Length: 552
Image 1: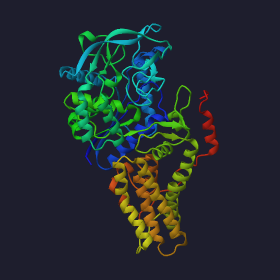
Image 2 (image 1 turned 90 degrees about the vertical axis):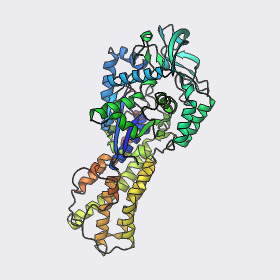
Image 3 (image 1 turned 135 degrees about the horizontal axis):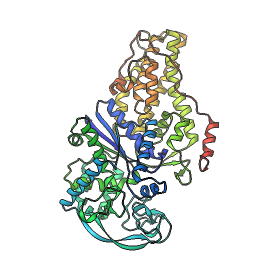
Image 4 (image 1 turned 30 degrees about the vertical axis):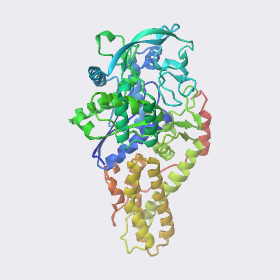
């Protein structure tokens, strides 16, 4: 494991609230991984930024009577507050409209231009005579020429994940009218020239998901298309050329460069050489499957185009979309759950537990189901983990006045329990290093279940032989759980730590400490109390009724 890491996740678009679909595939897995790396002694930093540019923001800010800068500043703060409430712990959260990112983007463009990777070309672009404007990107909808999926945006087919060269059956997404075609000049990035170097990078990077890598390689074989990187709007990073005064960069040209510019800003401000750190660290970009094209083709090609001045990603963990009660999430139909709304009803750890447990390291879609959420929280989190910790600590308080007893000779069951603790750190670590977060969480629950059974088998309440061993091992197992669940459930981890009567913060522990016996005989525990509160089915029925209604 590298001793340095920079973690990023797809940037939240500064045009509306964060909902459950946003956090499931990118922010939560990135946060869990960062916390795990830090416990392992890695100098790891999780940086992110709001994605501030683009036509939708320009239009929406006009509707609300705000400048685009005022509009995105509101959402930048709101998004950060919502993430913080969910215990997504960024080391730094910035914005693509920052002066640092604007300067960085323009510098990268100049280098690409000087290297011969940029050219200007007159193109025919959709123009809406009704709205009197060129229609970039998401303001043209039609049929994907590759997979024939209907109602797709012109810059990305959400069905097959490809970027259409030209959308079929186009319509203005503002007014629904068929647009005309008008001449305009745009700047293009020579993506076609990078087929061989992209293939080489894909073949050499052994950390990338094999299934994703395979179909990206097929895209390359079928022929890459040069990339239109400018737009005819006023809100964006200005193109730094005298004859391009009315043009800005396409959002996908500038936003992933904010991964680098934000990291550099943060590190340089800390007195660390940002560029040197970036190039010596493991680089993680957590994304959803809908933006594979951008992160496996555009992003690496641009870095290759400036001679890999900033290293390409080592890991691009890619996960599927979240559906809700079996249906696609839709804000327009109110078929979504806002993160802020959810956290008004349930602790962040409930949602963190559920989303990790249903989310494999694959592109398979996952489904949030209220009934399944209820079952998993009540039977797994409360009935298993919460039950074990409470009974182990509560019994010690009651039977031994809160003092951990001295151990005696271990019997076979005690030795088995001891081995479970000794092996847990390495077993979990291996899964987390491979990004199998769901499997690691399941392993913790199996560990807790084992100790529930062990405690029941030993019957310490009879105060027979082996009672002291049972209490000693169970209390230390609770300590192991406290550290092990910290990346997943940070608030609950600290509660257990405090109930164990341990000093400081669980986040300052080491990962290897999971398998140590850190609660010695004679140690006095803190106050034991239930970690979790049951999810009531009557409340869940009310939450279900809220979906699809406009009374929220």
